[in-house]
Amino acid sequence: MRTIVDWFDQTWTARGENDELRSQVASLRSELLDTQDAAEKAGYSEDLQKLVDQGGLSGFEPVNASVIARSPSLWYSTIKISAGSSDGVARNDAVITQDGLIGHVTEVTGGTAVVSLITDSRNAVTARVVGKGPEGVVEPIVGATGKLSFGLIQGEEDVKDGDRLVTAGFTTESGLASRYPADIPIGQVVETIPAQDEQKEQVNVEPFADLSDLLDVTVLTGGGSSQ
Image (cartoon, rainbow, N blue to C red; front, side):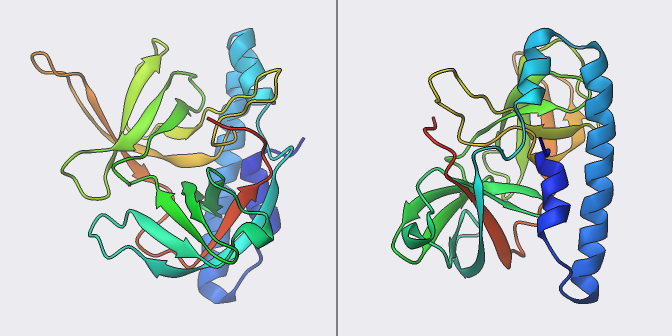
């Protein structure tokens, strides 16, 4: 089964020198994620191994689209894209670029869709640390435009600067699936602020995708039920 990080490089073609350079960067990042995943598979629990094995694009159909409008908000919380229900796009479909996750579809018409970005204050993404296994939630930092944080939910390993985060994802026997498929690159930990008084440790995350400069995106359609 192809992993989703491999798929980024296989489905995007170079569009001039700038796009070719971005593709090379994405390819190097994919190789790093694959190497760390291999190390993870060697020594983690059966449940986590199952989660990793279920990653990839099985059951999803990629639909390419262009960004045709952007929210006027300084938060860059939403974008409108040139694909809609006539292309198979539906609410809650995950949306990516060759660099990683950018958000999910929240509104759909016949020929367009609105995408809520991962920096939207209403958004949250279940994530895990590549190579370590701890799981948590990536969500916007209140009062910090375009910034993300990672809150640990499960796992005892320390989260450190430089750690890379991917979507956790899940699929049940009944066919219910998480909004985001597993193993989509999200971002990298850039700062950890120790806990003070009653406040928890804050882990700041920088998205891999440049959310302020989105031109072309891909919607992962047909993934079945989600929550």
